[in-house]
Amino acid sequence: MKKNITIDDLAIMVQRGFNGIANEMATKGEMNKRFNSVDERLDKIEKLILADHKKRIEKLEDSVKELKELLAIR
Image 1 (cartoon, one colour):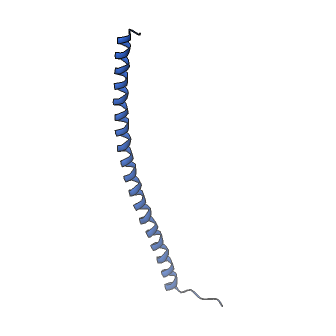
Image 2 (tube, rainbow, N blue to C red; image 1 turned 30 degrees about the horizontal axis):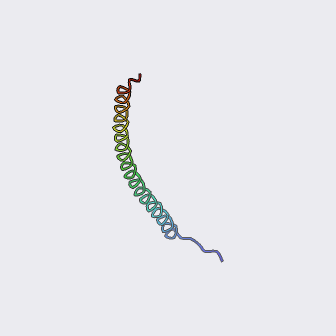
Image 3 (cartoon, rainbow, N blue to C red; image 1 turned 180 degrees about the vertical axis):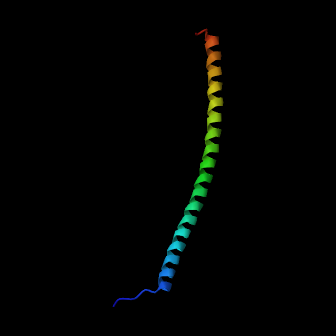
């Protein structure tokens, strides 16, 4: 049996489709916000680690220089 679709039925179907798309977009927007937040936090952590490594390398270089001077190594 074939069902005739009325204009109202069609309007309801279209509205449901738009609602579904709007919900998906809102969900994706929230996901993007969370990913951006995670990216920012990881950037901060990376900068801290790099700064720490730079300090440690500089200390090691100074120590090696002192050792070379003490041992008269060029």
